[in-house]
Length: 127
Figure 1: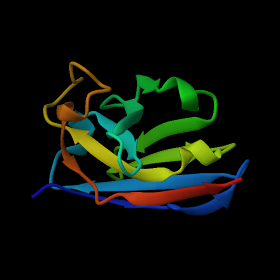
Figure 2: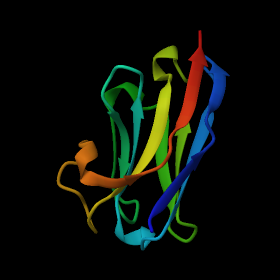
Figure 3: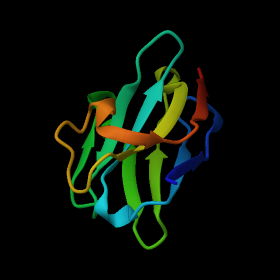
Figure 4: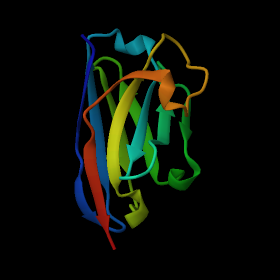
C-alpha cells in the first residue's frame, strides 16, 4: 500500500521560513515524479512545485519562484519543500503527491497525474 506522510507545517510570520517533508512508502520512490500542491477552503487544489524522479527537472508556479525550493532524497524516500520569505497568500493546506506512472507525467501541474496523496499539512502565514 502506498503511503505519503507530510510534516513540517505550522505558523510563521510573513518573511519567515518553513520546511515541509514528505515520506513515501509502498512504491519504488526513485521511479516516480513528485509534486507539492496546496489548497485553501473553497478553491481548487493549486500546483506549487514538481520534481522529476531523479531530481534533474523541477518546476514551480510563478508565485513561489525564487522563494521555494523542492528537493528529494531517493535514498531516504523523502521529498522536501523549503519555503522562504513566506507571504500571507501562501497560507494553505499543503499536500504531496506521487505520480501515477513511472517517469515524467504528461502534465506536471495537473493533480489528476498524481494517484496518491498525503493527508496534508497546514501552513499559516500571518502579516
